[in-house]
Image 1 (cartoon, one colour):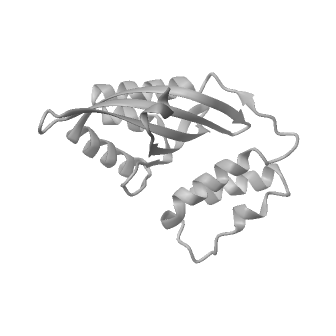
Image 2 (image 1 turned 45 degrees about the vertical axis):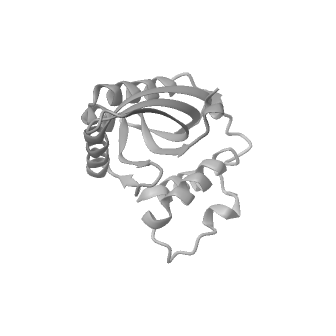
Length: 184
């Protein structure tokens, strides 16, 4: 399924999607090219149709706050519950975790290794019908559990949301390292 499903939804919403959404050759496996497809789909959201208007979303930010609370508490199950069943998590230097079981395993590995205190600063957010997105920066205070070494890191996030059973869930979470000044 993957992002092809999201692209199909876009096609239903607007007959004339930008050609670059279909620019990847069919022989490229979806999982191998998921980050690129996610970014292409997210970039295409704004061009879905002239009648599709973004509405500023105050509803999406609290989902990230709950995600930060789950990580802070070391609760992988609470973190995974915030994702759609076919959700994906893409962290730097890691393979994409796609689907509930992969998300659970990725979060369990992460939380068994480090303690995370994460603070998000949402820079922009919007919803278009069945898709929402936000762009944020984050400051993470990290503690390596095996050594006690502490550090602070900064990152940028692009998070795509979709409703599932009437509740907005994280569909795709992409994080990339950022310099400290990006989080100001």
